[in-house]
Length: 170
Image (cartoon, rainbow, N blue to C red; front, side):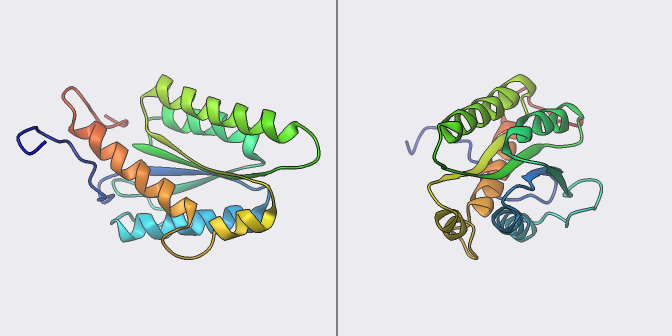
């Protein structure tokens, strides 16, 4: 691989506009995911939530996980974002609802990203218990919101490096 060109995604978010679509359901968990994502983006050079322009971050709150894909797609279609991070929490219950919801959300986020060409990352926890979810949303580098945000930055930078690529807002 030494002689083969490699396009790698930089973790520099200073020039990127990132939208965070965050579910309000299971707010204690999703707020921690959002905090992890915001911290990762700040560490990568993005400006805080509520700022405008290059390197800015915007939080978009939706009621639950099922609503994430539509909001993410609309955010991507707006041209305001170079990447969208999807954050939510689905906890298994006693009925098959979990399976249908988790599958529908995952497929719809992937479809929205494919349809718009805007990178979207899946930071939607699918766990057996709230305790498992809380462990994945804790402080530090293993926070899944943090991981989803960094993946979005890397993919946006990879796509921006490919021939014919242009930022979402261009």
